[in-house]
Length: 128
Ligand SMILES: [Mg+2]
Image (tube, rainbow, N blue to C red; front, side):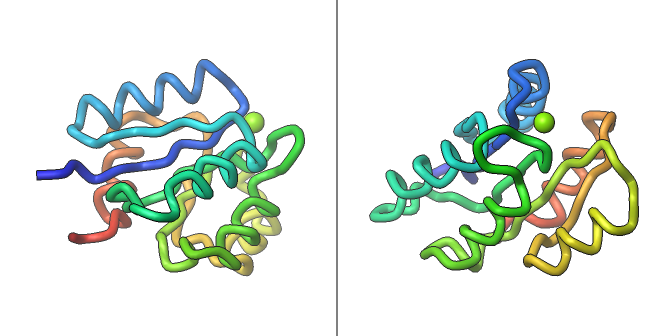
């Protein structure tokens, strides 16, 4: 059986590997990207087979392409129906509303515990 596949997009190598580690430990397959631009490239390479992609997890503050722009682009792509969970350091309402407005399904405020991440992921991941 193919594992549910999650794309993790974050410019911080530390956060990216912590998140990936946590998800892999929970049995998910994980791909990583270091900013929105890189994330779109990864999606482009998966577009034929979809590779079991079931969720995108993305940071908001990133160089080259931030999370809001990335989400907007995903919503215009073949992957527009994929649920998207985003991370932010700001719990400001404006950021959360912006995320919602561009089509994100949920968010986590950093720093978060592994259990919070897994809870949110389990809730959002696309059922097969
Ligand atoms: Mg960042």
